[in-house]
Length: 111
Image (spheres, rainbow, N blue to C red):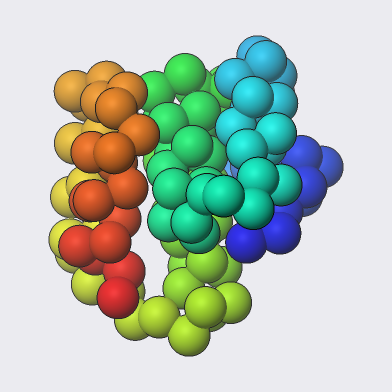
C-alpha cells in the first residue's frame, strides 16, 4: 500500500486529531518501501505505530480503520469489519507490539 505521511496526517485530522509524535510514524513509513516485506506486514508496522505508539492526539483507532479499508480496497480484499474492530481495540488496549502477531490478526480479518 502506497501511503505518505502527509496523507495519514490529513486522514487523522479529519477525525479531529493532530500529530503529537512523528518518530514512530516515520519508522513505520520507512518500512513501506522495503520490497522484502509483504503488504500485510507493512500494514502491521503502520498499525503498531498508530495503535500502540499513539502519534495523534485523537482518532488513532479510526485512522487505523480507515487505512485498513483503503488497504482492502486497493488489494481487492474483503473485511470482516466486526473482527477487524475487535483486533484494533485489542491491539490498542493490550499494547501488542509484535509485528508478527499484528500481521496475523490483519490476515484473519482482511482476506
